[in-house]
Length: 335
Ligand SMILES: NC(=O)c1ccc[n+]([C@@H]2O[C@H](COP(=O)([O-])OP(=O)(O)OC[C@H]3O[C@@H](n4cnc5c(N)ncnc54)[C@H](O)[C@@H]3O)[C@@H](O)[C@H]2O)c1
Image 1 (cartoon, rainbow, N blue to C red):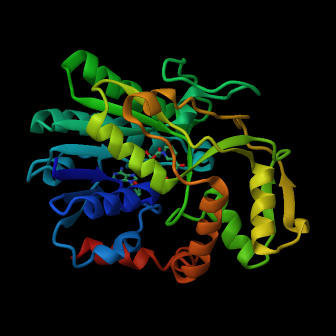
Image 2 (cartoon, rainbow, N blue to C red):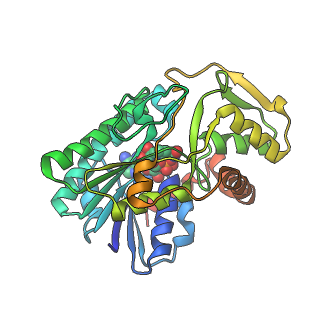
């Protein structure tokens, strides 16, 4: 495979993945289809400005014409990241989640079939399984029981992708990954949100009792896992990609405070959000056994590196907080 279409490549995981593809194979060519919503930031890929093997196409995955334009030169593989991805926003207004995550995925599946794309990988989430009790971990065969409009829309995308395999023999693969962290994550998600506030000595709002547990996976490990599934996964199969690093939100917050040398008094507990899943954990036996994929980066190391990255790239996140990154959106509209 040398020609890739990546959707949502201006977002957090997508931008890390585009960089991985180009770095790993000198023959790789990548088209990035991205609508540049508030979460899309072309500055995430500013280092590729003069890379001839990279092409940016601004467009919405809900629009067949935009997808066709992005597929014009053909694609050996499509990796579908584009999504509305923030649970809190889905509680305020589920509609864009249904449009992008459900309709957008179906449009892509249809257009990929028409174009004869060789492999289609959907980046799904551990959140489709719903909430887990104190023990055990989700396996790929467990029922899908999403709790939020976000996870319900991702579950629909997940099922439509499976249906394309069963009904049409489409060459699909699915990964369900756990909570990612690392460079270029939009500062509305827990770790960068708290980090960017703590750098400025602002209080950090923790939902409920802070005991909700998430399994953390460094974005570089996640991208390696996605690539491994794309290249060696069995068509029609789902692969869990977990980090094996379960931490409560309170533990994460305390670790960040200690890495930054800030006082615990900056923690403020706020009313829990509705439908807040208590715990997620993924059983990674399948990806490890079939594909030899395991996360490589330890959590302490990964988190310390993430803190260093946000410290060193203050201008990147400050331009987001000030809304200035939106000026590159306009520039992208008039290339
Ligand atoms: N971040 C995580 O921890 C995590 C965990 C599991 C799964 N996922 C999944 O991975 C994928 C990427 O997540 P992320 O955190 O990088 O998201 P993100 O919000 O950082 O980026 C999403 C990108 O998609 C683009 N986009 C949104 N709607 C679009 C549309 N209609 N058409 C074209 N482009 C559009 C945005 O402009 C943005 O560049 C998502 O599908 C998400 O559900 C994320």
